[in-house]
Amino acid sequence: MKYLVTGAAGFIGFFTAQRLLKAGHQVVGIDNLNSYYQVQLKEDRLKELEPFEHFSFVKMDLADRDGMAQLFEEHGFDVVIHLAAQAGVRYSLENPFAYADSNLIGHLSILEGCRHNKVKHLVYASSSSVYGLNSKMPFATEDSVDHPVSLYAATKKANELMSHTYSHLYQIPTSGLRFFTVYGPWGRPDMALFKFTKAIINGEPIDIYNNGDLARDFTYIDDIVEGILRVASKIPEANSEWTPEQGSAKDSSAPYRVYNIGNGSPVQLMDFVKAIEKAIGIEAKKNFMPMQPGDVYKTWADTEDLEKVTGHKPQVSVEKGVEKFVAWYRKYYQV
Ligand SMILES: NC(=O)c1ccc[n+]([C@@H]2O[C@H](COP(=O)([O-])OP(=O)(O)OC[C@H]3O[C@@H](n4cnc5c(N)ncnc54)[C@H](O)[C@@H]3O)[C@@H](O)[C@H]2O)c1
Image (cartoon, rainbow, N blue to C red; front, side, top):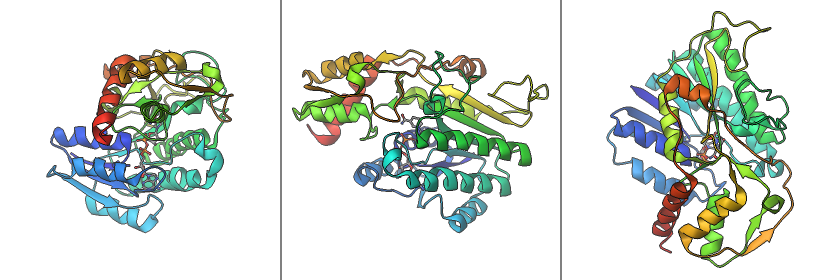
């Protein structure tokens, strides 16, 4: 099968492409290698993919309309796994237009590519942040996601809406994946695990938001990739019994689905910090801070659907996952 993986130099895209290549598939990866975080890390991930015979990389921006149209036409992809985006909740308060360009225009480029080139399945990244003000736990795909609290979340919700439209109009099967705080080796430098590990090793204090009273459903990268690939092999069908009055938000009369992919067990921020301290062997200097605008208090994924449809239940514990990250970090940065 021929796959397009967008954001292939990114954290989740890199591991997804690697798994597909190891299984013998053909993968075209695209990424604009932007400098939101260290470009070297993105280049080093790509270096790991280069030895695979069936991998090719194209440096391209999703918003390059002609370039994207040509790429789709040239390759005739079977499946598109769309993971490129401007990620990060806090940065969306600083640079909102980056989110409009990559997440709105970019997503439209992908949908148009799928529309004109008979792609069999589009799997794309949404986010747990779409749950916004929702406080019902755990977060279920039937819940309302109409009250986001950051522009990032709003663009991710917009991706789901745009995908539904294309599934409805052009019968393109689309599956949206709401990822819950993904972590692991080769992870993102703007996320807590990376920042905390770096600061603790350097003897610097770590910023603990909302005085530590936050919880996240941390999900290990291998569990996420397993979920992505299993969902990719389950092409959604139109639900003929679905009605706007009685149907669920997770599917439709169009071939459209959304899933949560999370560990299904929220961890208190201070327990997460303890796991990092244990893995590093140093106690952190802690700088307690107020709640950050755009943040949510707690995330917790209801993953029943994912399990029912794909048989996959994420299971790597935070202790194990953090240990693996710290081991990678020490080796990669030689510290
Ligand atoms: N990591 C998480 O915890 C998490 C949680 C929820 C959702 N997500 C979503 O999952 C996807 C992957 O996230 P990640 O953690 O791997 O992030 P990442 O930043 O490591 O990867 C995204 C990649 O996309 C590329 N990119 C961004 N804008 C682009 C554009 N306009 N054109 C081409 N390439 C572009 C970046 O250079 C980067 O390499 C994103 O859509 C993100 O919003 C991630």
